[in-house]
Length: 176
Image (cartoon, rainbow, N blue to C red; front, side):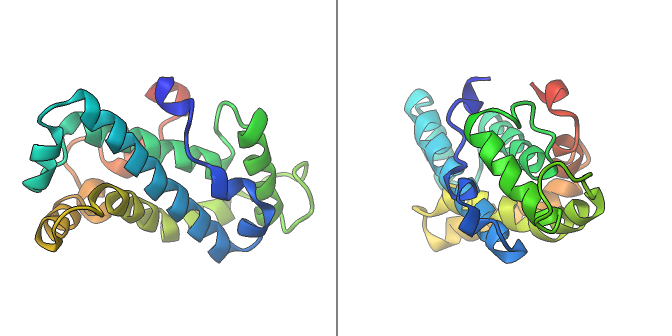
């Protein structure tokens, strides 16, 4: 899809930024914050009232949906379930992540998914928070707090509709 043509993965392509679990966390945080920032810049150019709405503490529903998709894309990259995992830069990222979770025994070793599940459970909320930071960095402290409170990972995961985690764990093909 068009939103995936330029997904920010720059920090994830560098082996030095993915060789330890904490470094991988930082790389995902940096990428997701930058991606959300650029996604918002593009979005608000096409939506006249978007910035006004955000400044009142409300993320437009259409943009929130885009954030869900982006969060899911980063989850797919971590779990090695991204459809384009063997192509171009995503292939390099996949190799780096496999090396970390396979104890640097190479990408051919069978994946131990439990390590990735534990890592995502611990750091997925930080990635969502980074996305909120990328979106709200230019707003007043009061509006930032409102958005971070109203759209926290916990609230988005305990939402009565399709929760953030439920949505992001769907197979990528079904999210497109």
